[in-house]
Length: 210
Image (cartoon, rainbow, N blue to C red; front, side):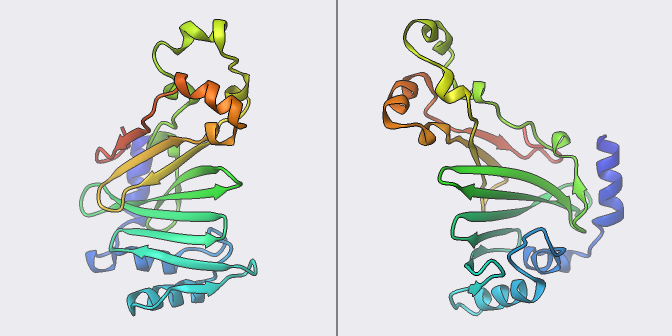
């Protein structure tokens, strides 16, 4: 499968270095990936941001979209009032990159979807590029010893919500367990002693998050 990924990158990711900037990929994004923004509006947002103005425009969903941060390899977009999009260029070999895109919806608790693309916006098999965190990872090592005696697992096992974010400066991916925020106050207080108080952090290792 990794051979397939690198073959796709060879075919679709051979842009010259001057073009390998996030703003170019954002503007060239196919219609429908971010349904609220057509190409002309994405271009306008970039121009507003680069001019130092507030980069906010009305979108097709009759709301507003704001470009919050843009660097050569990172973008943060408030796509709607209740959703964000993060994009990061991740380096491979021979000056090639892939795009990691994280869409987070706040409804009301944050929950994310992670997708990977070539720089020509061909989707890549996510399972080859990272292993999604599971609810079990967030349990303390000794949590199972107490569950049968004092804790009902059902409230946190019925639904799994996680917020992913990628660092603008480094190639680290962070997963935060947001299911507890979805619980009522009593259930949350009971659950927290059994949960780790730190997120899971992945590091980009040339061709995969580990």
